[in-house]
Image 1 (spheres, rainbow, N blue to C red):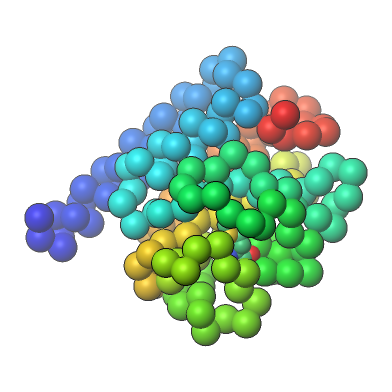
Image 2 (cartoon, rainbow, N blue to C red):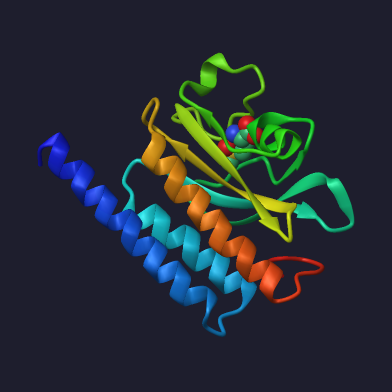
Length: 173
Ligand code: SME
């Protein structure tokens, strides 16, 4: 497949994930199942997205992110203070963080020696950050403008879901 064909293919896959997610949030699936199915689908459809997971703010301690459903290798980082890591930076800055070369960023907390780039996108419900989507790639600079738009749209759909169902307490248990 040429690079152009791969781009068209990935754009099609991203659009398919968004269509699926819009349907899934309108179904009666549980929070935990919804988040697990979301990461499994994104991980299986987009070949450079090698680890896809959720970190959600601990409802009893908003200075701490807790690992939620994920697809990919197990990570030692099951709880991350918002003062640490790329994951913490996305909450502290209140915006998407894209790192093209994780090894050149001193904030980076390593999950796999194979990871080369990362994107972290906050999820908001009623304007407040409740968690984030974290994606790692074994490819350097894997997350371009279209990836960012795609992951931000996923976060927006999920934020609407959590907000719409009167989110309180734990998002995935
Ligand atoms: N790299 C993240 C830690 C989470 S693992 O990648 C799954 C960070 O720097 O916050």
